[in-house]
Image (cartoon, rainbow, N blue to C red):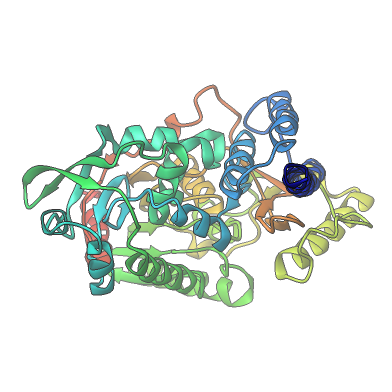
Length: 487
């Protein structure tokens, strides 16, 4: 009788476990169905930078994966990989708190906080709380092992930063699948993406680094990540990013050169922005300045800069096309976030495009420069400063300046395409996992025809890759190099 009771209990437990797993896989499949439906209905063009059939086949292969129980980290991996196949940097998924918690629970990190400056991996100073917590349970010998703050990491477990980024790249989206913008996206979350691409499979990992010109190799034990230091760094990075999105840029005369610093184009439109541009170019003309620096490092875009370009090329010059490939429909997925400025804008520009088409004046979205005071058109030398974060409308501005005004590019390769991209970000939240991702119903094109190698045009005339930890020092350095580039 007792054996029979044990059998019943085991069978019941198995049935409950099976039922729970079925519910979990059903929930995963509901998420997948929403993901596929919304991306196919709202992403501007799946074939903008690649083969549409390849994207569809990747989406189809997800069925087999999501029919089995998946951890949240693995769900994130699969969605990120699928979206990267579209090869559009706006179309991506970001890890939420639950994904971060799942990663941290693996305790598969090194006892250092690392982040990218450009394409160089550096070590952050640990907070005292992390120093104490990371030492718990370790011998005094292991606790004494340190990598000095400010060190540059050359390799981890025998892999260079370049090697690790190549593995990480499959989880990050970028225009034309270029690697540069992926460095920018991974900058503050390098260890997270390093774990996604290949968790450590040993307890002791070799780290090779440079500090004050000395190269050192050290073995560190894996375990808990320095969470408090990471949180502080991520918070500071988020604050700076939001600050950079406010306002529409700055302008000054630096020695004998004009200097625009645009950290974002999110607010760079409208009456006040046009007044700012007019006043800036009027100052250039009044002071007879014939050297102009336009710095768009870390500028991930926003409004297209057609208004600025009219002061460079004049009126009625074709700058490309902009259209809503997937306009607002009467009924949209309830999983798209609708009470936010991005969706309101999507609805508004969809109506405008529909009205222009009805009037026969849409002209396939062709954009030309508008009227400008000819006395203010700038005809001197131009230097553009770009880096991995120069994306979307900022990259298109760099393209226009290079090809229409013979501007010199310095810095590092821009992350965004000089040819085309999907934009107009809408937020999709999956109903079960609550993962959030971005789809982009609009498509923009520069005035250039597509080419076999879209990266060649973006290569800087002068490459700059300094390791400067201080933000203000970096700003001063690039301004100085911009001035030197005229010589």
